[in-house]
Length: 133
Image 1 (cartoon, rainbow, N blue to C red):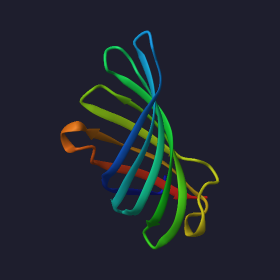
Image 2 (tube, one colour):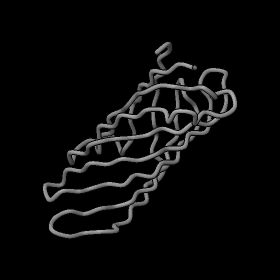
Image 3 (tube, one colour):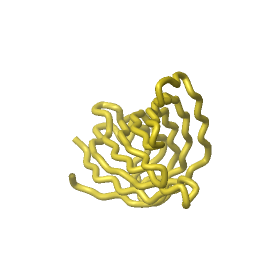
Image 4 (cartoon, rainbow, N blue to C red):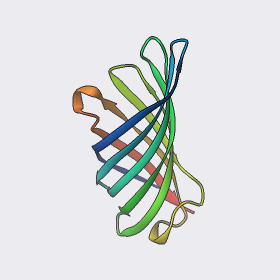
């Protein structure tokens, strides 16, 4: 990757609904809004599907639509998320969905991640390694 972006993710809302619960496994759907500050500026709206195990650990996957800018380039793109929650913190990795960049962000590629601790109210520092095709 050619460039590295860093900054903060600020949690704005989290709406979670259970759609299945049986034999110690709970499945939920979460709609989450974040604000990006730093090298990426804008807003993200993501949808997670989460599997909670009886020990309170969780595996989740999701997609996030980001609207904003990276440097002087403005546009939108989609991130594919995977993660694990151990009860104290969520460790998340993400990659840009190929072909999802629009406007000045067309051709965006990259990957990154963050660790969100409950003690930080879901806010986190992100790292994003990216380039353009």
